[in-house]
Length: 107
Length: 122
Image (tube, rainbow over all chains, first blue to last red; front, side, top):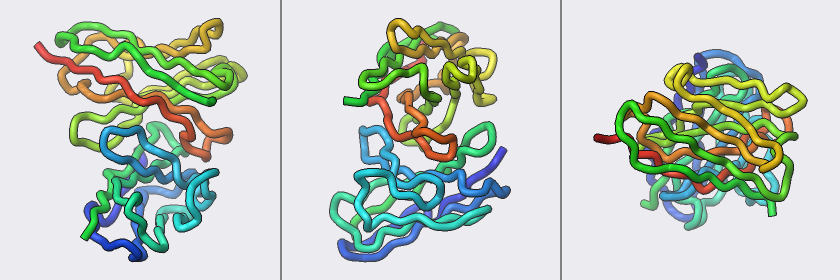
């Protein structure tokens, strides 16, 4: 199985900050990586796919990069609505796996 | 509007069975891969299965944690997909989501249902 490890698991930041979340994989899977945002009691929302392609309708302050075994999600200037939990997901090999999540909270 | 709606979640005893439904509107389910993901209370996301599209004969994949107990099927006439869950365990307690794969396999799940809650307890 491909293991995904997100860092940090918890992040405290302020509105306007630039934040980066890293997702490291136990093996190479090219760019078959997606990022999701989840708010309490809601379904996840797709932000980034193919490691770096912004999903339609997602604000441009979100960006993704990386390939192989290390990927990053960057939020260039945090907005109040961005405080949520973020997950990476690999879609290359079965079983499909998610990272453990990064909880982003207001400082 | 493109939408997925899950239903069927309820309280069930260990060893029992349940069938969850995932109904699509605004698009044809037969054209798309559909994944199921669950989230235990206070925990992260866990992928549990995939139903490929009609072009790929609706073949399926399962996570080891549910293989042999859970089965995915479809009803084209109802534009719906079903998750049959047998031999349920307390650790199957979770919110279950179905989600549409966005085009290519690398594209992630772009449409999600609202989730349905399964509680396994005596």
